[in-house]
Amino acid sequence: MTVFDLLDSIGQVDDALLERAGQRLPSHRRIWLAVASAAACVVLACTGVLLLQYFGHSSETDFITISSRMDDSRLQTTGVSRVPVMDGTNSSASVSSEGKGVTSRDVSEWLEVSEDETPAPVPDDESSAVLVKEQPVAIYYVVDGRIESKTVPALPQPQAVFAVWKTENHIGEDVQMIEASVVYDTKGVTSEYSGVAVVTHPTDGHTIYRLTVTKSLEGYCTPDVRELLLASLEKTMAGLLPETVDDYELTLWQPDEERLWHDEPLNGDGRGEILE
Amino acid sequence: MDDEQIVALYWDRNESAIRETADKYGTYCYSIAYGILYSEEDARESVNDTYLSAWNSIPPHRPQILKTFLGKLTRRLSIDKWRRSHADKRGGGEMPAVAEELSVCAAVEGDPATETEKKLLDEVVSAFLKELGDREQRVFLCRYWYAEPVKAIAGRFGFSEGKVKMMLLRTRRKLHDRLKKEGLL
Image: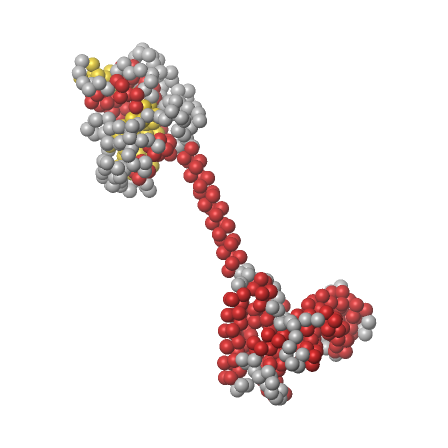
């Protein structure tokens, strides 16, 4: 037997095999390229979604954005014993606390205020007729070294409640509320951030009431009234919630000279405006 | 014109069958012939011999697939031509390399197979090819049926040349073992 006998036998192969042999087949390389292209598209899509969330209007994402850009000079502890320390030394502080299983809602959702409702003007005094709900709101204020309270008719937004609190405590318009939200943690949070201070939360069903106001509030916190003032704020804002929360967190935020995240100021949604 | 009509022309002894065949499958046959002979003149001559051979074999033969029928004729005629004109195994093209590669499975020089051996060899090779995996089967036929260069096969299937060479080497070893097992070596 010679090579030519073998070549001749190979030449007698079935027609079907012969037809198929000349056809292109998808190679691993082409498959890999297709998969890589698809993966790249997915990555781009995910990046786009994340960017949208990052620059979007979600209260949860906004909070992350704000906190992650704070530095030491712009985030300080409020000094209230129940308020977690947030000095912002770790940029991932809020991100780490809002991991899997954590959801956030704006306080206005708890107040069941329709988004279609026009936000009430900030009342100048308690005779202001910003009456949307029958549930009255307790406003706490500091007077003569103690905390007093007064009840005002229901207010449509935390922003309006905050405005009343400012009025009662003689806080100027330079102080703004950035965000009021409730964070649900169904998975448990081990630490709020991994910086200087670590706040440990219990697991399952833990709720955190987060309030962010501008750092200019510090200007009104003289040593003798500081703790009382911040406590009155907590009591006032926490009183808006239909349920008690497990923790309360106040962040004082100093915006950069340049805009940090939104080109347009936030208002009317309980998060306040961004100061320039 | 479809294949059945062309075959009908052959059966009707209509000489236009040759023209129709050339129009439809002339390039295909030429590519096979050129791959083996590596000469335009020899390839054209081989293709013309293919038409003549088809004219002489249809009827009585009625091919199921005219394309592969013509391809097989072209290949056999081209290998015969190459063998006569390149007995010294020199020359261009892929056939010297193909013959060299297959020499692991069969002697280049030696006594040709007897009719009995030839029949058994056809059966063993056919069964062997059917047992190969899809990719190995295609690569093997591209190399040893069409005499395609390794580079062209690599490009056709998107493999590296090294991978094609390795696939061919392994398949040849398998064929060698199979032929040995069947008593053909």
